Amino acid sequence: MTASAPLWDAVFENAHPVEIEIGPGRGEVLLAFAAARPDTNFFAIEHAAGLAETVAAEAVARGLANVRIVAGDARCILAQLVPPASVAAVHVYFPDPWPKTRHRRRRLFEGQDLAGAIAQVLLPGGAVHVASDLAPLEDRMRARLRAAGLREVPARGPVRPVSKFERKYAAAGTHAATFVKPGA
Image (cartoon, rainbow, N blue to C red; front, side, top):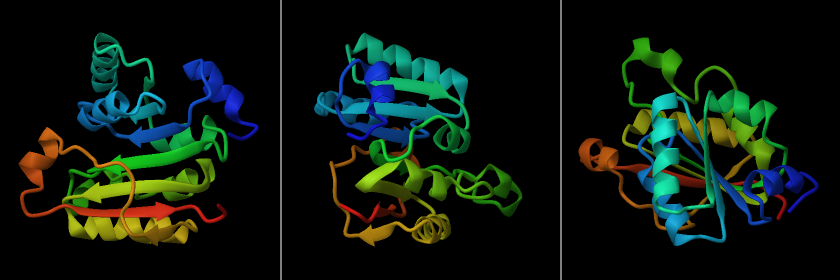
């Protein structure tokens, strides 16, 4: 870990590596990862407070001590609260369920520089795993992550469980990618 580790040590009360999921929704992927990998801490950022509370309660019910979740805007939380170079991986799955142009303001990779904030918090060699059911939005995520200095690599990392959302909406296919921060 880096000099920023004391923050995560205080949050999780251990020094395990930290991974962030942005927009876990109902928490299916987050909770599955946390159960399968108890030596990794998972910090989630969910925009909807009700969903965040539900996922937090489910983590407690399952005895998953390696999960923390906050409600808020991921762009602000990453940019203002997460220490630079302190996160091993970031997961962003199906962030934009609004394909219409009029919903552009709701898209996670529009406006403020989420990709830059992700690059800032990643450790050198850290990975970003993204997936979408909408090819144009996946292309946008890829372009933003490349512009932030992250390098696309063949998909790697833990096998991601298929969520209820993905089963319902990604019938036409899922577009996924992995990026890494240079320097490892």
